Length: 368
Image: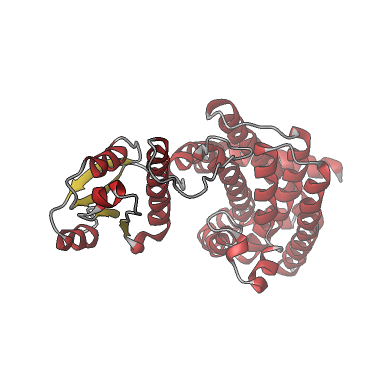
């Protein structure tokens, strides 16, 4: 049996290595996509345009506006001359936010009374608008603190924030661990989902059927090469994120690889199940994307799981990508203990047992 498995594993590895499309999709594209997406997919908002409508002629309003001009977040500041111009700037998307300073701003400050600053944001871009509003609120808070130091009425109690694990809010530190998990899943899906379908499309599937290999041996021989290839691709992405992009790696490398093997086993089981249903590679790719889209969206990669309904949060526990993203963020950003990793690894092990069993059952049924 071991000789038969060895021959099938070598055959699968050689077939993947000799196929130009497989080499690009599996070995070279994931690190390239990690490099591109790490800079493109980020929650950071910068280089945006804002509008300013200043009805005040005092020096205090000019001082506040100069703080917006000196911020690296706002690339372009559009100066308006009427309230109607604010509507036009927001409606045409020339500015994501408008700052309105009323005519009595400086006079109210000089008299020791509160002076309002109105922020009008574009709700069509809700996420970016909330972030820009936070930046503007911080600028106004810093301005209030400066006024307090000059002997004017003090601002409300100041809030001093301290961020753990990512003190400078580096967007790469946040994006790379989650991208690493998602792209590792994509590689595992692609290799396993195409393996049986490729055999049927090339006409070599019948040769496997007349060989001495048993159905279980064929499943194992398809699983191990996919696991080896996906692990190699993940290693390349890990080295790129750690050594090239400078994302810290504070956890245990052994624990990461141990959980990654369990994770890839569950992913490969799903891919083999899809591949057993498909008659050709095109159908396998379509089935892959039908599963991948909801799996990634429900993994917590794009939106926090805590924001989802309770019943949907329970459903995400059956998604292996959800557990591996949590492990990757913990291993990269902080040294999470082995008990926490195990708490997210054993659900993936159960998923792997179920998916591989389902794939083997369907594979034997298709053989019959």
